[in-house]
Image (cartoon, rainbow, N blue to C red):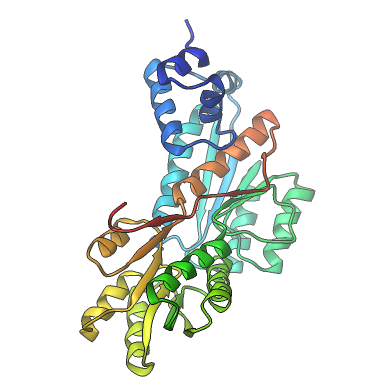
Length: 341
């Protein structure tokens, strides 16, 4: 006899609605609760009706995924989400075709879109490069090819994409400014290190940070905004040169990758007292850095959710004709210290 949603709800001690949202990836639900429900469903041998239908039809749905900065540390969690969704959706008759971009390059991304379209994808999850060429490609997919597009991690305006899944990056930059203001008491100089100036995610974080500093901490000076291309050695070089040539730096805000360069620079400089530091993304390397006391705060953007959720949104759109409930599905801005990792 088939296992029912009601039986799973009773076993998990939650409502039927909560089980439905977890199993079908609909609406907001605590990730830990969702994971527990899915584990219980697997243990009980639950097979969703949609999976049975798709298995019977033997029809494969192709969904494309295009990422940027494939080797960056923050991509570890995003890729984990993509791979887990890929494995789960096999039972739905869904094939995930992944194209990993190595940089923020419009030519590379445009070529990837064309290749996936030629392979017959019916939906696309995209970390877009913010440029007119990619806007045109997205609108070509959605309007002419009738292929829905969901953006994640980074967004793009002026397109017909269905929704965005990711952090409110401007708001996270303001959050970082608040943390820095508290630590420095609103006095001193802050060095900002971004990754790529062409990356809209990085730019939104920097803009939010500067906006909040100017508003709430007028005596906190921005010592400069420098690009590291997400390279550890470049982060090290920027910090070393800035600390030597710009007196009074007591705060460092790293908005993108290469955060390991912070510790390397501090060790090379031999500082008696290091500046306060705020970084992004809960990765194993960053956890180690914060536990060692090199960094004060880490802002995590829940990369797993960003990689996982778009593929279910597209699957629901293509198999059930269910549109996203909201245009912006923002992840939580999680503040981590060595005490709550």
